[in-house]
Length: 256
Ligand SMILES: NC(=O)c1ccc[n+]([C@@H]2O[C@H](COP(=O)([O-])OP(=O)(O)OC[C@H]3O[C@@H](n4cnc5c(N)ncnc54)[C@H](OP(=O)(O)O)[C@@H]3O)[C@@H](O)[C@H]2O)c1
Image (cartoon, rainbow, N blue to C red; front, side, top):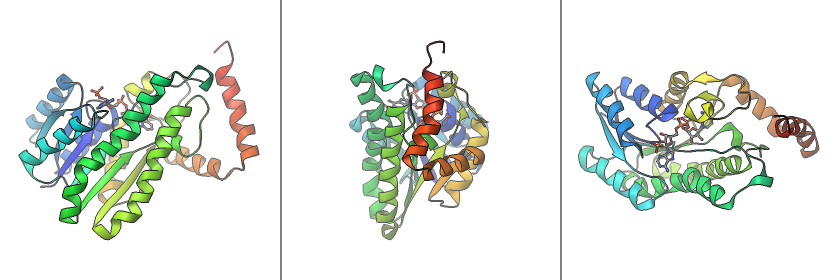
């Protein structure tokens, strides 16, 4: 039986992915800070005949992530798939940026992923096998107004994962970047902007699991948003500023 460790698995995409991988026969370790939610999810999975464990862990803390990985390895042996999914965002204009908040978003989204990578890397390299996954975002493909820090954290993830993918292939390690568009979760519930083509966390988990299990380099979804972002990525800067600027000005209008 293969083992997956998923951070940010107390709610949303991480929880749905844990359930989906369990349904497909994986042993799943669910990591996050809210132990009560993790315990509840593990109890449900176990009652359904799956093998799951809860690992309380703050990904902002490298030592805590190392301890979480050690806990899973001690119980089940090597981790076959590590998914850096924990993340947060705080949509606001850069004129209102608070440095401490920005640092925290980067710490959780980007450094949190590096903490996980650092903790699973020795065993994956020694075994010459394993899959490392980062849940970034389509919002990382260009700098999105009103989400500058979030966009930047996800772009940093994408750049790291792309470089690591190439470097680690000869070591037998697969690296996958997951770029969701809008998925209905507590994160999007807190965000009041319009959310075109939003899908459920359960549907997202099926798409992500399909991609991960076929060893995809990238999993971009939902398709309409992913296609739109591919096109937006090709726009020259003047056209990007024009098109995205109109949307941003509407978002920042005083009556919003
Ligand atoms: N939903 C979307 O539309 C969307 C789109 C693109 C990308 N994403 C990305 O998908 C990932 C999951 O987001 P989601 O939508 O499923 O949001 P969510 O339901 O709010 O889940 C976020 C998860 O991250 C965990 N988390 C937050 N800070 C943490 C920390 N310091 N240490 C450990 N765990 C932490 C939370 O658990 P605790 O609070 O219990 O620790 C929770 O389990 C994020 O990286 C997000 O950026 C989401």
